[in-house]
Length: 438
Ligand code: GLY
Figure 1 (spheres, rainbow, N blue to C red):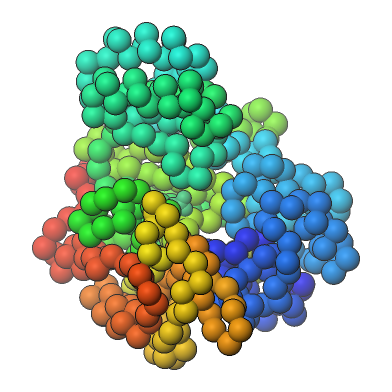
Figure 2: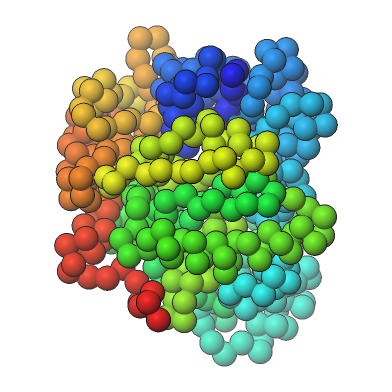
């Protein structure tokens, strides 16, 4: 099979790495890729949002399967374009990708499916949103821009003043452009979050192993939000039985509601879950693999990912049985100086091969580029160092041991990735406020 992966981050490196290990793959391309990806796959100098360019490439190169990493091309309709041109693609069509592309649409479907999620109101005009806020007595609450806002469109507001400023930012200042032309004012839910990704082939839902990610830049979950500073998989206490229950209670009803509207979901569906005292609720859906969750999930996958993606795209998930290694995986993200407020480029990265040769360690590249004989930083999140271990403490030690071999000017990483999993595994704490047996 000739495979094309669309995207150029750590998630896409993890996908490429898994596809290259498949006996089904004869050639793997990645557009646009990065410095690490091009050590394993053929880089293609086409941007992930250049749909016409990607289509022309896929036709010319007779690509058998295109796997789309980021949400933007999916929301823009890459799966429709490829399918209409007779090309097989892994990823939902535009109508289904709206589960991520429009938070208001996602909420509408969740309501229709009667699944557990936060209460919300929706506003397209500032006066209406401000009038709604006048009636609110309970804070914090959450203001969300409806559309894609590069992870910046969710604003947690501690009081009415902050909430008014947030709706003004979206609806009057248009800080997120058209993405903020509609806002949701949503109930604030608290509890640990879990990312549950599931392969969906139109009728079947196969949950993957759950993961947790770390959104804040600094240890102890301090500082501003980022694209994700690390992740681990699996999640102690959230076992396969819980994942199946969540698939039954939250995923399948939503896909059925979509199907009643004539929309089929094929690809990976990522449920951003929150485990409250009242049970598991949906925070949001994404229509793609998570980043950096994928860098912690895939090292544990003991089945052929390419075969699974192919079966998903063909609507034949009944032929797939995902198997998982018993080991834990910890993935630590390395970011560049100034991230997330700014990013630094062109810093020479050393120690990559010294880290990558360590047993059970994989160094996934994200924002990296080749400059002469060097590999240099090329943006915010630069690498993800993933390691497997027989338990979380071993995986964490291995990941941080590998990370210690890597250096570049201004590099940043969190020192506490998977600490809570280590404590939970040791029986010191429980990650969740619920007893699943109830
Ligand atoms: N880890 C968050 C995301 O992929 O959106």
